[in-house]
Length: 333
Image (cartoon, rainbow, N blue to C red):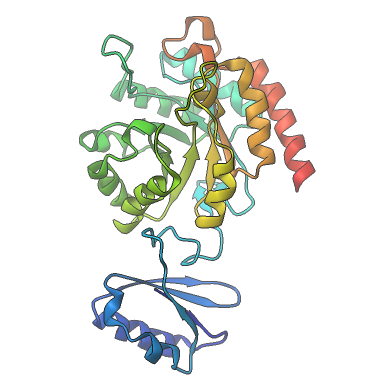
């Protein structure tokens, strides 16, 4: 249920209403906008007399929310969420460029790529330390050592780091990671989502390869209901009948998600296509579609990459793409 207060309501009267609702056993989420305050009622709202609440002098409107996701619902939060990572702002008209290799391999590799993508305008460095692989015989990542190498690259460049966690058991290793990624395979790992909700750091949540947008939002709900509202959604392609790309990039998800939720929505064209030459056109399309950012794989030697070299851009290719992305962003501004 949503209770919209009239403009100019005093903090005292607002707090009195919130206290009364909380005494009914409800959890109240307050969203203060420039022109109105929205109270999101979470819990068993059948205990609330809607007519009584609507009749209060300070209340403008009362309405039920039919969707099962509440915390991440646009109706609860009319204004876009801006997730801040150091000096980087994601969402609310801010566009974030995230780039780096699929896997952290060596100090030389990650530092070289970090310097290259920063020179091209990237604001955050991605790199996999823990790698979920289909085959148990493929490279599984450097794990804790990989995170330490990412920290070295951060110290060298000043770029905040983004890396994926696979298990709640490993979260202590991520205490100094700027943005924690929960990948497509773990989108419905509910224990991990709950633990991520207890953290104060931004969570980049990727859509599963066979999951609906409602399921993605319900996964975000797990994180937010546990106390962490700093969630960034990522469309990274879904499994379809296509046999020429790794997945099918669902760009309509950007518009739909922006309508349904206040959370930032970024796009991963690398995992969506799986082919480096398709990454630039899909990245440009995502920027034109209104995405709040892009996460792109860049490797200084894709031919010898230990993971996903086929979808990785070379630094010079990323630099050329970044210039075009800025042009698209300027054109749609």
